[in-house]
Length: 118
Length: 114
Image (cartoon, rainbow over all chains, first blue to last red; front, side, top):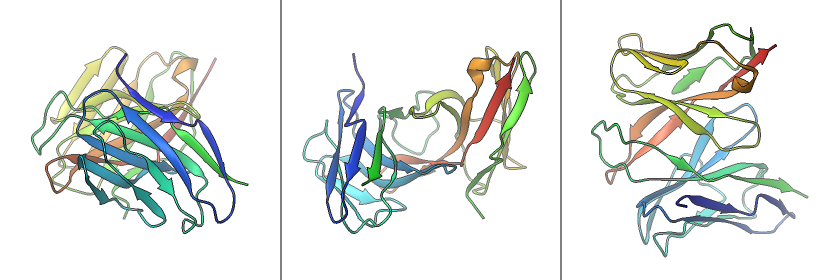
């Protein structure tokens, strides 16, 4: 079945440690996104990538890094510079491109990773 | 001013009633609007998308859009306890390079009680 796989489901980070969240998709989508969700808040965009070997900062990129070496994979590293990393992290992808409205627009989400600080 | 605003709730309705969820957005040029349902600890799932002024119906769900008032709403008829979730309003925003991002509201928590 096609979809987006995130792992692990739960992750714990020690102070000063970098941790990496995995995101893999087999939907052949070019665009991939990382969102962060805090309780009582909407999803906020961390990073996005529209093509292999290219990625851009979103609204809250500080303390995070990403790579896009393969079309299928878009891992997110939460660095020690991120002082408040506890949140629910969601990876997403889409094939819908362009400014025109299309009825095929849909953002596919992974099942999420809950990151907590030890 | 937040780009997408929703009442956080909780909105409590009895089973069988109509639940009305509201959302306002700040960017007048926005053209695409979405409603997602999110159960606790799960990822959002798309319920409805709407692009033109007026109503769009899909089963028990009706999305309403008024671009002049920058307002979008979701009506859930015959509400069921299984509809209890957080409902996220999202607005499409263009990115340089051709793709788009979704800007999400904080969500409205709906509780349907028997």
